[in-house]
Image (cartoon, rainbow, N blue to C red; front, side):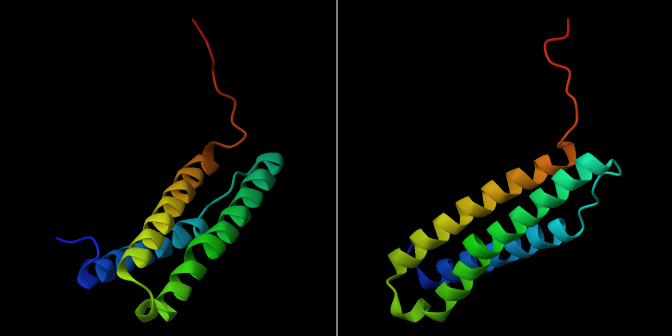
Length: 109
């Protein structure tokens, strides 16, 4: 399969839209800690990740869809790769939210 094939690009775009929606849903369903200090940190991180998702993923996907026919398939593919990388970073940051503020045991023997 060619990476610049329009069918492949359409599938990849739909996959990224689905992943972005899943991340958005996970952010919305986040249950913060009952400890005030930790809850404040977690909610701030939740808000930051939501803005990052909107700016770096959702807005770019919408803009790309609007001018998709005007761009070369290779340019669209590169944009999709960048969006994919952003989603991966956001997902990794999202996984760390529940453990924010927790004391970890380092170097115990």
